[in-house]
Length: 478
Ligand code: NAD
Image (cartoon, rainbow, N blue to C red; front, top):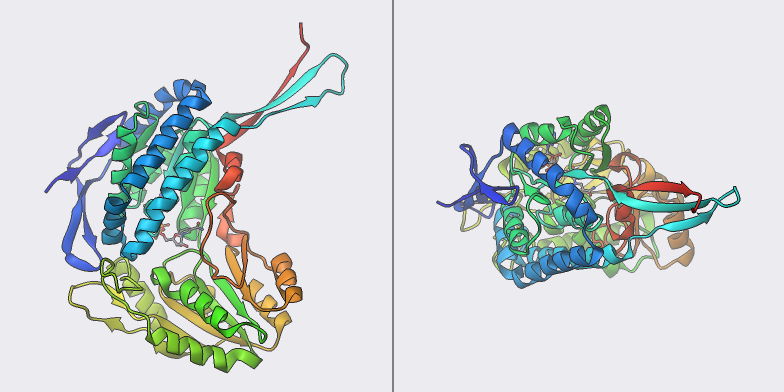
């Protein structure tokens, strides 16, 4: 079987240790073997990025525009192949996987345009005869560390702005799903990015991630993943003087008020809680429903759940693919058991058999829950949601905000007054009205508040806050 090698200083570099990438829809289907980099190789990648940095930082916006635009175009042209690889290794449906690849391509194109718009300003001095200019410069070498749930979407929303603003990159994808990242690296190589500007080091967090954090040549780390790992990374980044950006977990509330359109609310709940197998940081895991609509909402949601088809990610009839791994499946099942022990009533949540061996799990809905239960406080990261019954809007808002997380929230209502109040007072970085908590657009900022995020926002032009540093120049013209 072909071994997929790491991409360091413009070369494909092998290693002794490999990881076997298996399809969670069909464990007999091996996506490929992927080389695991060690500390030495990671440091070679960092050296290559540091060496490439001066020329890349000094390259013209037009040059960077053309390379990024070419990468975006090549990703679009390869969307079917990449979408299939992504669906095979991660388990989201082929349609969702292909859409993710398209979004990644358009993100490159968006940031190609941003290379031409890097802002600066001239501000009048307090002193006569002095001029002040404020400009933005790249950080230098940035390390990108990403999770398994969006194998190309999340890497690209870090990589494209990093390159656009003149940084060089060492990228560590998750061990579980390196395939789409590898395909993307091949496309980047073919698009003619100068050697060393982008490096792919597949490997373990404890090895590659730690080496990135330890290096004094790495100036910034952008991380998406779990809260536990994120907090450790922040501490290590601080110790070595790196700028750091963290996007972490969520326990996102979907509020349904008495006056909601029932169909809209049920669709928002099904999409937010169960599509993508609930494996989204923005998934709706707490459905906070007022008394007057509670029973109708729960009945309609259960009816809709019975229609959801769980199966192989490549089957066009599948609406929900498998759980990504055995480990994640066990985590989901243990929380389902915990919910029962905590006294909640369960619908669904059983392991399913399909023609192929895979990690199939029926969506699980808990009713009769309250916000203090562990199933409502801790991120499960599977197709598991709880209904919390509340009296009115005020209680709904208080419960929605009673969490250490603050990534996304949503409200279903036909009242402008409640929608406006919720947008203003919901303690989340992303607030939706009559929409699922999940779903984003690449041209506007993404990120959370409280325990969900740390550092500047990602995406849109707000991405420049992390990937550039500001210089203030004072001068007396000669
Ligand atoms: P994870 O934290 O286990 O791993 C994320 C990445 O960190 C992986 O590449 C992993 O190899 C690496 N890593 C692990 N230990 C490390 C260490 N000691 N040093 C450096 N790197 C290390 O997360 P996961 O299980 O891959 O992903 C699921 C989590 O990601 C969930 O908590 C989810 O909410 C979160 N997530 C957040 C967002 C967001 O934007 N807020 C988006 C997607 C996923």
